[in-house]
Length: 163
Image 1 (spheres, helix red, strand yellow):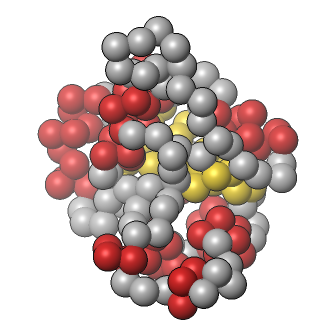
Image 2: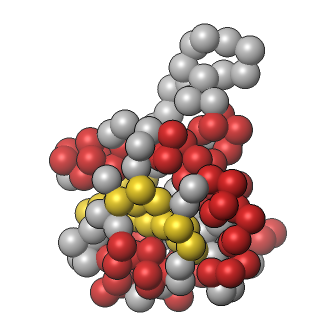
């Protein structure tokens, strides 16, 4: 499967490493130019691109950017794609967002509304990056960590999270 990752922070990097380990082809993008990802892509064996290129390249796209920037990604880039939403809202990082602070909406609703043409799956927002790298196992244990996955499209959930 071809996976595009928009966001080269800890979760994006961990997801890229895990996906490549499973045999998937990965392109990762950050908010800067692809050459700024040179060391990361060489160490992982991933491709680097602009966010639009990662979206075009992919069957499945992981969105792992600070929540406040999600509207900067044009919705048309993700029409028909499985979009894995790994976002969380942190007011100290994202600034105050009244819809969320007043409990009038959720991050999931806002992402699904903006990317209405995508098949949105909420996942990887309740797991630490190092646990993604560890195959979802708790540190020092053979037990897997339970992880919530949400979405109303069963096929998208299976496709976006298959090994």
